[in-house]
Image (cartoon, rainbow, N blue to C red; front, top):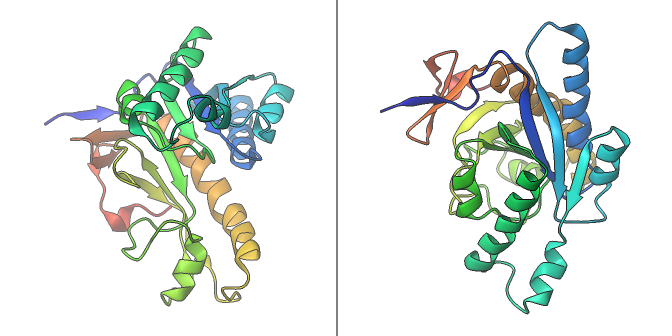
Length: 251
C-alpha cells in the first residue's frame, strides 16, 4: 500500500485548471483566496492558470479573462448534436474529454490539480485516469448521508429527512461510476432551522456564503497546495500524515 500526496512540491505554487459551466462564483472565491495568500506570503497557494467550460456562454469564462487567466471552451451541446448521439454515452463522453485534455495541454498546461467548480458535464474515466487523484469537486451537502439522490437540492433533502443543519463536502473525484469520491473535508454546520422546503433559493444562497465559498478555497489553498493531503488505495484520505475518519473532516 502506498500513500500518495495529491500535490507534493512545497517549493512552487500549485498549478490549477478549473472546469466550470455557470456563473463562476466558486471560481471567484478560489481566485480571491489565491490573491489574498499571494500577497500575504504566509502560505503556499494554488494559481489558477486556465479555466475550461463546456458552455461558451458561461460567465466564468469572462470573469477569468477579466483577471488575465486563459479561458477556453468546447460546446458540449454542439459536440453531441453534431454526432447525433447521446451525451451520456461513455464512449462519446471519452471522446469529448479527449478534446478537453488536448486543449488544456496544447496551452502548455500541466495541471497539479483539476477543480470542478460548478462543472455540469460528467467526466469520463479516461479523464479521471489522465489526472489520477488530482480531480476534486465540491457538493453543497453532506455526502455521507445515505438518503441523497440526484435531481433534488441537497438542502431540500436534508429538511425532508429531519436535518436541522447541513455541511458542504469537498472530495476527490476518481471513479466515473460513483457519484462521490473520498471525502477530504466538510464545512462547519450551516443552520437550516429558519427555512422550509419552499425556500430552496434562500437556503442555497446561505449555503454558498457560509459553506462553499469557505471550504472550497480552504481545501485547495491551505491543505492541498501546502502538501497536506494524501490518498491511499484511491479511497483513504490522510491529512498531515494522519488517516482521517468522519469526525476529523469538519473545519
